[in-house]
Image 1 (cartoon, protein in one colour):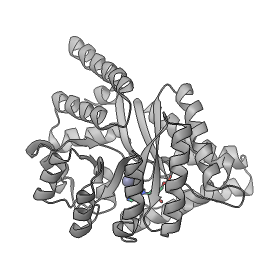
Image 2 (tube, rainbow, N blue to C red):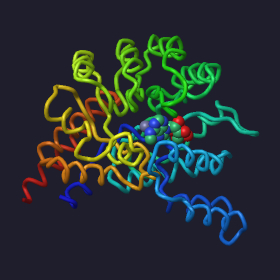
Image 3 (cartoon, rainbow, N blue to C red):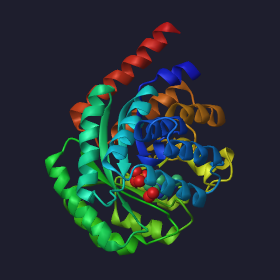
Image 4 (cartoon, rainbow, N blue to C red):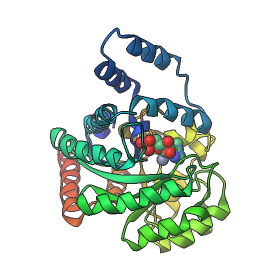
Length: 341
Ligand SMILES: CNc1ncnc2c1ncn2[C@@H]1O[C@H](COP(=O)(O)O)[C@@H](O)[C@H]1O
Ligand SMILES: [Zn+2]
C-alpha cells in the first residue's frame, strides 16, 4: 500500500503556503537567501533545531510568525512558493490548490505579494509538471479593512489570471475574529462568482458554523464540530468537507485518530469528503502520509482511495477540461496497478 499511495497521482485541495514548507526546504530557502555559514543562516539553523513539536493550535500559529519573517521579501516569497510546489510535485501531487494570505512589507504591497505568487505559480507548474491554482486567504483575526482590501485585490487579480486565481479561503486563528463581521465582504465575493473554501467548525463553535452553512459555500475546511444535522445540510448544499487528519491531532482539536470525524462522514453519510494535508511542513506529513494513516486507522481499501480521489477531482475548482485530464491520469493509474496485481 505504501508504494501504491506514494505513486498515486494525488489531488491536494487544502494547503497553506507557509505551513507547507518542511524543515528541509526552510534550510534550502535560508541557504539561497543568506548563503552558507553567514550569521543569518547560522541563526536560522539554530532556530529551526529549537522548534519543538507542534502539539496545539496556539503553537502552530507561533510558527507562522517565524515563517512569515523568512518570506518578507519578494525573493523569499518567490523561493518559498517554488519550493512548496516542488515538494508537492515530488509527493506525486498532480493538482494543487495552494492558499495564502496576502501580506504587505516595507517594499511590497498586497498587490505585489499576489503578483509574485501568480507569476511563480505560472513558472513552477511548468517546471514541475503539476497544475497549481491559488486560493486567496482572508485572515479572520485581521481588521475588516484588510479583508476588504484583499477582496478587492482578489477580484482584480482573478480578472487578469482567471486560470490561476480560483477562489477565496477564510482561515486564521479560529479563536479570533468572527464570520459575522466578514459576512458582507464574503457575500460580495460570492456574488462576483468566487468559489469559497472556508475554515468552518475547526473548533467547537456551533452557532458560527450554522451562520456559515446558512450563508452557503463550496468547501468546508475541517468541519470537525459539525453535528449530524449540519452534515445533512452539507449534503443538501453540496458542500465538500476537507479533512486534515494529522493537523487536527497535532493541533489537539481532535483527541485521537479513533475519534476523528473522517470515518463517520466517509462511511455513514452522503457527504462528499476529501483528505488534505493543511500544513504538511508544520505537521511533518505529506498527502501520501495522510492517505497511509487513513488506510491504517480506518482500513481504507483501494476502492475507498479511488472514491476519495474522485471526490477531490469533483470538489476541485479546476475547469471541466482540467478535471477530465486529471481524472484520466488517476483512472489510468488504478487500471495499471490492477493489471499488475
Ligand atoms: C492548523 N489550522 C489552521 N486553521 C486556520 N488557519 C490556518 C491553519 N493553518 C494555517 N492557517 C492560516 O494560514 C496562514 C499561513 O499561510 P499563509 O501565510 O496564508 O501562506 C496562517 O497564518 C493562518 O492564517
Ligand atoms: Zn487550513
